[in-house]
Length: 419
Image (cartoon, rainbow, N blue to C red; front, side, top):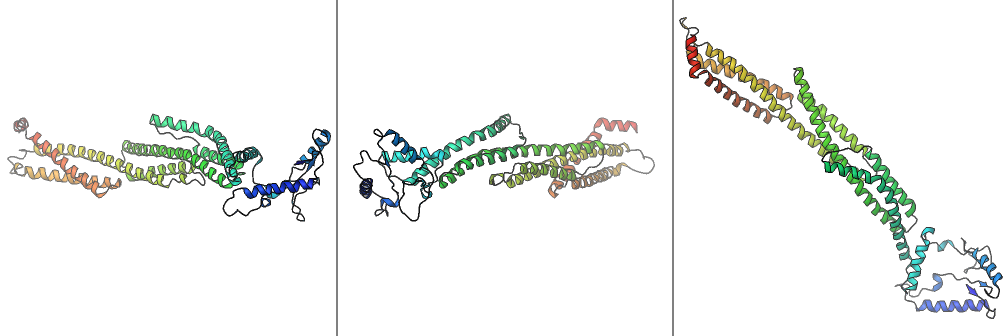
């Protein structure tokens, strides 16, 4: 603004002189490549106002300053003229093309940065200043919104850390709802405050904030699924074992494969329900396909272990039955020695044929029983073959033990005395 101290110099002459001086200064400045021939009025509009002398005419000066202050508002450019006019009270001096998308709460920081550039005699780059302002404000806003996010998530992280240290898997209740609400809230709050600043900076800072938030939420997500995995496998094994014990107590034959199938279906349904409750929209890390596949594979492995254990118990029960039967049958065969003497029948000559026939018949019955029961376990061919081999081997050992017992010297003498 030009102040006419004494009124000796016409305002128009001062305007021309100032414009000429500014033009010379502009032409002497170093400019970016491609803008060497640019003019000052390509970037600036000039307007002048004469104010009364502040000391000699204080009242008029204050009145004119107030009048001029009302001009600092939004205005428009009259297409019929190229320069601004300050002689009409209706003209505002803030034209739409001046807008640099600087929010009011960030203008002081922006202006301060511009002024620092001017004071330090550095090349003034207004777009860079806008980016710096955007970075400063976006970082501030990110720190503010993260305070609310931390208040909601840190207690969950503390519970998870405590469970990890104790070694006991734990499912956090309503975790999916907390993940969704916290993520949506922090992103929405940041967008509301930061989207007014430089778009490139805002987009980059939003991505950084979302990455930071997602890293923490994804850790909770994976930890929850890991706990659901461990708990689910343990519950599955317990439910199968309990169903088997119930079947044994009732004394009825039970379908082990059916028990496993039902328990596995329930375990998968529980895991998928928990995983679906943790799903977060537009978050690739909340896809649980891999975790579900690993869980299904772990259930299959647990099923195989349970089937192996059950096959071992079945083989043990059948082996005990074989030993009991061998004890009775072989004992009767040896007890019959000499019973038909004097009647023309020699039972001694057929002793070992009768022992072998009784043994093979008993083992055959046991093999049939084992094969039928193993089919109900959905056991593989190799597992059945291994079970039959062990049954024959241990049955033969039981036979040899029983024969050695019957042929002990004391037992033979006892039989001779009885006959």
